[in-house]
Length: 121
Image (cartoon, rainbow, N blue to C red; front, side, top):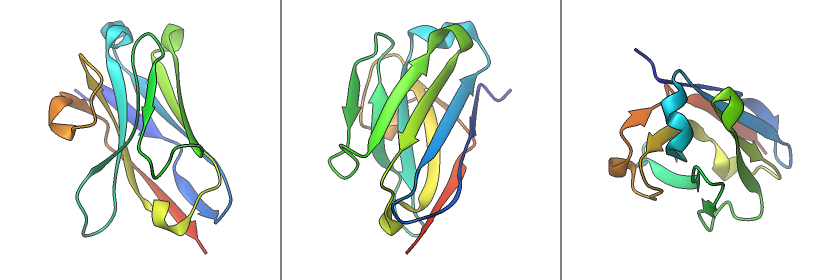
């Protein structure tokens, strides 16, 4: 069973915006912290952003001020707004769920299937 479903990726020009969504299949995820990770070709998966179930957010330095995480608990959905995108933001983006907020992928138990974000220069 796919507990988390990512969507919203696409191809944009540098400076453009996208909004990624991650919908959970079960209401239990409302009390989970949700993370966003990304993986570029040939690179390790890296932390981008996270939001606790109370709305506390944390961002990687590389995306701070450009990406915004939010959540709609009534609809079991979290969002990642990507603004002022740069070519180096090109990657597959994954949402993930964990009991506590963390920047480490290994702390997350559930993962979405990923959505491709491509930023052209």
